[in-house]
Amino acid sequence: MADRAGPVGFIGLGMMGLPMARSLMARGFAVLACDSSAAALAALAEGAPAGALATAPTPAAVAAGAEVVVLMLPTSRIVAEVMEGKDGLLPALRPGMLVIDMGSSEPAETRRLAEAAAARGARIMDAPVSGSVAKAKTGTLAIMCGGDDATFAQAEPVLRGMGEAIIRTGAVGSAHAMKALNNFVYAAGLLATAEALRMGEALGLDLNILSDVMNASSGRNIATETKAKQEIIPGRYAGGFQLGLMRKDLETAGSIATETGTDSPSLALCRALWSEAVAMLGPKVDNTEIHRFLGRRAGG
Image 1 (cartoon, rainbow, N blue to C red):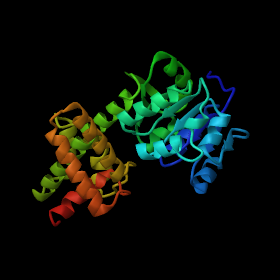
Image 2 (cartoon, rainbow, N blue to C red):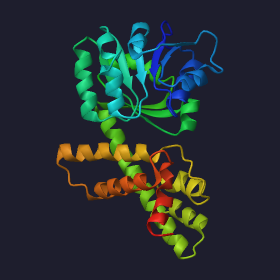
Image 3 (cartoon, rainbow, N blue to C red):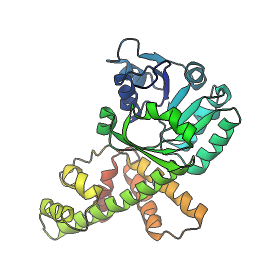
Image 4 (cartoon, rainbow, N blue to C red):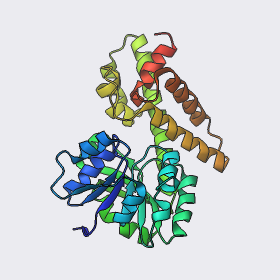
């Protein structure tokens, strides 16, 4: 059993953060939660075990009451605001504290904040997740972890309250880099799947059989396996990951390409198409709506 002596601070109760915080409480952790949304805090309180939940008005107040603080925030800009803004975490960090950034932040920004935290005797680990809202609800996420041995040892009990597959990736910042590159590969597979389904439809093919063919053959990928029949073909478009967040991860991958001087034409194509899709459909729609975007783009 993990050490449950003190609460885990948790900042960011969005689509993924809310079930992740609930998973921690279900596994015996007390949570000290902070979110700008009163509705999100109220939703977390519903069904919370007695004595398992407290709330804090600011990130600094979370730091005052917890030794380990989880961030589940959508962008590096918001992470920086929570860390360095008014009543932020950074000035309130104490020696020995750990901040776990579980969003999909920019690796260079993660390294910068880790250096700032280290100057106060604290640590930052990047631990982005892979998996759907359903996996967040069951505490079976895959979690990538960037940090040294001491940081991982401090974080591991908390991470196992939310995830099943824990993968160490190297130094701080490496997990955010790998998450961005992984999501680029996913986006490329989703785009190819959506285009293939559009072409199959134009030919009058049975799209469910086309999906079966791809899943039994070399075209198989996570999009053909979990998005084609489930979300795209029936027009449900509810895979659980926003189009705008996909675009953001592609931009992070683009910053890695620039930093490393890597020629990446397929990444450039994905970035351009996802940006066009966000402009047309808005950032809040599901990422599987890239299929609907392709149809509208072609005038269909």
